[in-house]
Image (cartoon, rainbow, N blue to C red; front, top):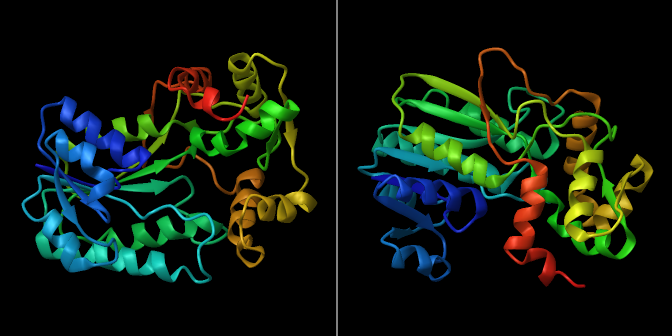
Length: 298
């Protein structure tokens, strides 16, 4: 039996999907069982718990061959990351108490760095807090999610411009589809090892530049799309327009600066590589098949 946190999200759902396809029993830790009803109908046993409740998490982790653990995504966390720190402490305590066969954590590119990480600070703290657990652990340091650009689709369709915080536009960035992170997570959960593993998880080897990204969306949208790098002076206003509170933009901007400077990068020593099969072209095309592009205004 394997336990999956975040089963109602993209990555956790992909982990569970791959485990079920392999014939494994799956438990899902969920905050709202109603949102996971479809998983229950497929035979997944649901355990209700807040992610910062160590006792509730322990009920989901006990007896598991492996646990897929993660911190809920938050693009505008409170200063000093109090919610994330509570969740990390609860996950650590529940794993230490129940000692499942192994734990695989959703981490992030850059989590080996101790500073200059912005939003990625939460996964750095998670790795630091869990590396001494008395069970085998693995960290999936995922690249930038291809899904991050879904919120800009209406703007792209209307203006023909695809704005990027990242730059330069010609740099190859390690992009990855959440389904490929789920593929990596399910694969590692079914493996045996001792100690600690770190995997750098991205898409096809070599990375993807932002001009290629814009071209992929142009093809599926059926119109010209120009990649536009946002000047740093515009970041604050753009983030506020996206709904980020004015006093909570700092961590996101620090993260972007570190990406653009090369401080956050892949190719670190002592890491394994996992290249998922999904290209940016295939990802964009999948949006058409799922009806996402058709739904977002035309």
